[in-house]
Amino acid sequence: MATWNVLTLAKDGYREAMARELARLDIDVACLTEARLTNSGKETVEGHSFLHSGGTQHHRGVCLVLSPKIKHSQVVGAHLRQTTCC
Image (cartoon, rainbow, N blue to C red; front, top):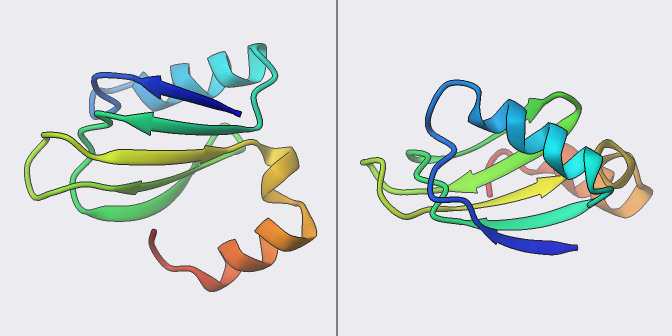
């Protein structure tokens, strides 16, 4: 588990780079601040689940990233299937 002030995930390729870096570091759960993604949502990037909550502009925002291993666990996986946003 890790926390990280990423400064932005809103630019092209940033989420992919984050997924690769978390995999390289073997981090299964990451809580990211300053993600700067708009609105709230859920997406899968390179097998990682990105659940984010932000405002209407690219300011602030948080993001929870789950590795494929955690995403497919029974408890977390069941919750993710029922959740439409964070």
